[in-house]
Length: 387
Image (tube, rainbow, N blue to C red):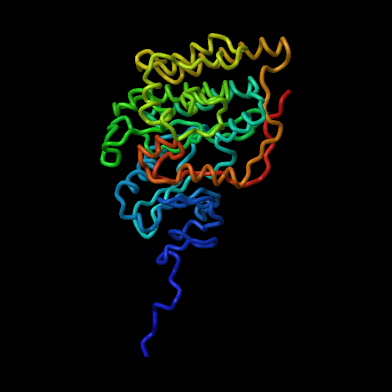
């Protein structure tokens, strides 16, 4: 009698079933699944070659023939290979052929910046001045390094920045370079043809028009992020009554006020949101910095991220000294935010969906078609406490 092979269990690589203990490419031992989406899955894994823990971004086996997804993951690996900076996540290995296509990256501890902003919003306590000044400097340093290497991120937003406590401040790492453009590349290539690149509430006016994005497009997005850090409000999201949302973590209504056309119209109009209109203690200097970073015409923005970083640092440090002298630090943060499993899963789900620019722009919950590096452990971590 011939052997019935159909009843025998198949090796995980044939079955496409991944579980703790599975070894990928004779190198990575899967430890625990961190998240999954329609395009792939992220595992915490042990790199036997380096003897280190990594985040392993694996495309679903049935998508291994999708040239666009494979190309995007390869491009992210190519971009990260060119970058070596403490404020940018590191790529460790990439394989674009075989049963499993993957990108191994450093396993990060911390939480997405949007979660940190949300925690401050719910507590009603703004970021401490020195924490904010250091955080902005860290984010800008990572982006500036990418620009110096000829790389434009094109999808900067709080979800693509991981922060963790360090020495009473916050250390930041920029991630998700899946749609980054190399200096010798084109905005529209084989994987992006006909798609607007970026996320709705952080896209520059030129990106909304499908025009080429350069470093000044990232400056625009950083201006949006700075506004949100200062105010705990979104820069461009409105409620159903055509008013700016009252809080950063307030649900973004799927209504006409937040349609792609409406948001693009606001972003491209001359009016810029002013931080001091929300927080009266903020000086006009910060209004001017935000307005310059988010100028409609790229020529009117800061010429580079370093210029934005210098202006923001000087304004924040001056304000902090003045407020500390008057009544202590001008802003305080939650005493003990934690890094939890729910936060990890939320971050992963934001990054695991396939790239669809219209759907992505309408919801602002998706990043790139690749999966993202994620948090290391769901352990409680001490957050910088108010002075």
